[in-house]
Structure formats: C-alpha cells, structure tokens
Length: 336
Image 1 (cartoon, rainbow, N blue to C red):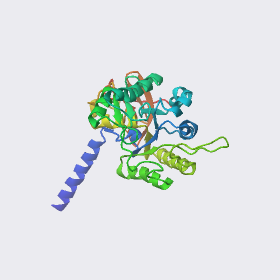
Image 2 (image 1 turned 30 degrees about the vertical axis):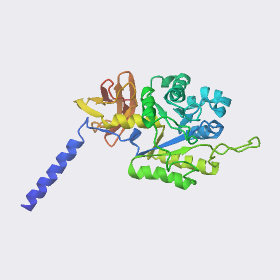
Image 3 (image 1 turned 90 degrees about the horizontal axis):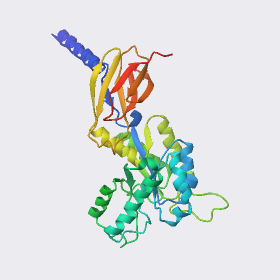
Image 4 (image 1 turned 120 degrees about the vertical axis):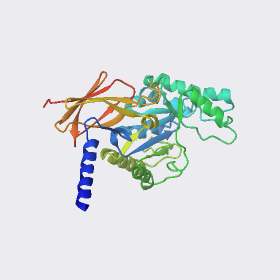
C-alpha cells in the first residue's frame, strides 16, 4: 500500500511539473526584467546641483531619477536652458512641484501652481503630452498652503498627475545621513520584493567657483557610493532603478493583467496580454516569461510592428510586451 501511494505521488508530481512547463505557459514578472525590487530616486526644487552633479553622475551609471521642478523659481529660471533642452534628453524625468514653491492661496491659484506646472512639463518634454506626470506637494511656510486635500486631489485628477510617496522618513540629510542608511532602504525593498525610495534636495558642489551650497546638500562622499551601490544591485538583477511614473504604470497594469494562450505548438506560440488599466495613460510594457519548446535556443517575438529576438534560458524566453496590443507571437529563431 505504501509503495502504491509513493508511486502515485511521484506520478502526480511528474504530471504537475510537465503541466507547469507546457509550451505557452507564461508568468508576468512582478517587476520589469523580472528584477527583485524597485528603487526610486527623487530630487526636489530644481537646484543647480541637480544638473551640475546629480544628473551627470546618474548618466555615468545608466541610472535615472525624477526631478520635481518649480519653473517660476529663481534657481530654475537662471538655468532654464539646462532644464528645457538637456536633462530630459539624457533620460531624466520631470515631476510637478508647483510653479513657485511658495504655497497656494486658494483653488484658483492652485490651478496656476499645479496645473500650469504640469502644462509646462508637457510642453518642453513632447513625449509627456497627454501622459501621466508625477506630483510632489512642496513643503511651504505655515499658513501658505490654503487648499484642502480634496481640492488638491481634484487638481491632480484634472491634470492627470500621480501623487508620489510621502517625504516622511525618506529624506536624504533630513532623515537619512549616511550611505549605509540609504542603501539599507534598497536592501529592504529587495528583501520584501517591493519598492523603496529616497528624496534628495541639494547635492554637494565642489570647486573654486562654488560660492554656496544648495538646500540640504547631500555630500558627494555619501551620494556617489550610494549610486554605485544601486548600480551594483541593478547589474545583478536585484533592483529596477526607475522613475516614479514608470513604476506606477507597471504596478497598475500588472495588478489586473492576464495572459491567455491562443495557440501553442512546437512551431509557434500565440498569446494575448490584457489589462484593465487605461491604455492611453498606462503604456508601460510588462515583462513576460514564457515556457517554449525544449529544442528552442533563441526565440523571435513579434507584437504588431515590434520585433525582438531573445536567448532561451532553461526553456524560458523573457521579453517585454504591451497589454492590450496585438497578439504576441513567439517562434523559434534558428539563425546562427
């Protein structure tokens, strides 16, 4: 009897494994590229050190961040060419931080401070037109923020803005002072397979012509090793270091995403990827991992006009696809 039960259990396990590995079976990665966790870098107030130090160091390491700008603020206007024509072209992303950082008198004034800021970003960065933009309420003097949370939320909805996570316990210099404390946030995200973030204001500037430091300047001796640590974890596949909106889009799409196998043979696999998120606002590709026939070494993926070829690893092809788009077709690529 025991031998019979053991044999039956073994047979069930074999069948279950075979079923799980059937060609076409697809898993939607929790995060882009099937990375373990997400980390967001955010820079507030459009300080000179953002374009002088922060952005160049991010570019060196192939990283990005969200820069929350105040277009009517003096520091921004002094360096307007850098913001309008350079930073976003290097892969940096802009967010709304109000026009002046001086507060809001009433709902009508909020239309200028928040709405005009959003319109300005969508004007200078063409690919953000009619797209979601991140928002961060600025810290202002007591008595200067005179709209309710409901009025603020209405403005965000009207202008298709997404509120970022709160500053509390995540401010560089203000809350977190060492590289180790900041890297601990990233490791916390990895352990939880979730998202963490850091909000930075100024970054230390060094040189003979530097006459002052920006607000709450983060020392380069802390900042540069932080970026190196994030880069190292990114290279190992542990972190997706991205901007707030890309993270928000991926999360929102993934939460309601479904993959349907339309056809699966030893020659071709056809899938449908859907999501309940509005495709006009949520157009972040999701990462899929599809089991393919064991003989495939490379896989050609086609979705509409988009085509790519990936290597097959352990019988699985990993690739990006857009929810709600054309069917996804996977075929063996036998080219050398």
